[in-house]
Image (cartoon, rainbow, N blue to C red):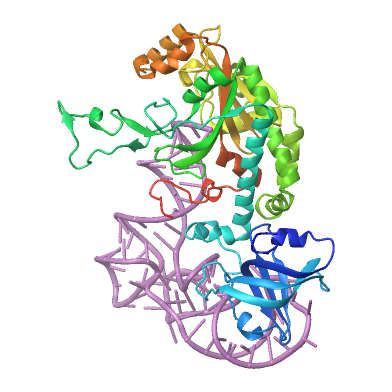
Length: 463
RNA sequence: UCCCCAGUAGCUCAGUUGGCAGAGCAGAUGGCUGUUAACCAUCGGGUCCGCGGUUCGAGUCCGUGCUGGGGAGCCA
């Protein structure tokens, strides 16, 4: 029971016995009325199911209450009783109903199906719909599960900076953070003079917390970040957002195999958590959003993740005889179609592809002994392709320095990152997982804009 | 950024060969003793995305812009 005396609808629906004097508050989903009886479906977001409120004409203001439109906010006190009709176990026989906030017929969510495109135009109201209610309950529950997983594994949660001067090269365009006057910026020799800016240097919003995460892993052994990440790429797809949340664990004393092991345990754990703790919402997604979702998640939770090297993957793709749109050749990155072929047709389940050519991966990934591949891993899963990527990090000071130069990154700009290798360096590994993409996988939602409360994409920062 | 598709009532959509603008839901009114996106009857509701063009005549054909969606690239 809450401080105002109300019971959450989820708790009311889970009752084991009838109860007098129950108080619930929530928003009207539908109103139905007969001559001598009225029904209101009331939802407070605590669960997918609405509770049925039954009004007979003896309830004060019977007519007025039943004129409340979909979207209105009500306080209902009455008795929780077993429902005589099919469709629900419990219902509330109302004694008194108070209109907290009325709604009129202009309320944009009607009691019928809307397109997700339309609902994006009313992002402030869409969490009151069934699908988005389920999505954002899942988002909350899985956030909690992720923290719990890492905390129980002894990982330290670190808040890496949002504003940063470190451009994690190759991770995408940075949003600029500046206080300079855009109309009249300070110039030195015709160039923009960033030393006169707020931080005294060029800064932007973080594209990854990994570099700072590595510094903390070299102090706390096992750490993770879980925070907002920003990419200013002009990407217009169902899988990209300018602002998203990323999970980045980093482990000291861990090689690539340890990294893969953590990734596998993590994914399985979260899938099991979702099936166990979000059963009602998952059942909804399974029925309405992605048929077969539950089988997919249960399959992942008990799958044995395979591993193959990039070189093997290229050999298999080359020999399979499949007509791909993009050519397969050692040194080219794997395309989405290649990744899906590997996980769906070759392996038939999750597969780590490891040891990619150094030329197509980031400078901080550890150079293998062959001198031409790096200890990188991408986890591929059926239907999606790549779901997470990670690597063992280059822990040798001289090799990292050389790799930075090859990638045209000035070692001076990342002196502190090199310092981690200067004193007490150790093998370490980590991976990055886009939270929204993971949510898409778990819920079956097909557009990243529909798993973020208020999505930011090129040309759209409204709400 | 590139390629493709779409835009018609508040919402979801139909609209034939270029010839009077339509349905369901929502809304209003009435009916119905327990409904389940209730049901039945009646009524009201339009800048056919904007601009320009072709035509006797354009929701329909052409050009262009805007918005949205799908795909690609970039990437998580």
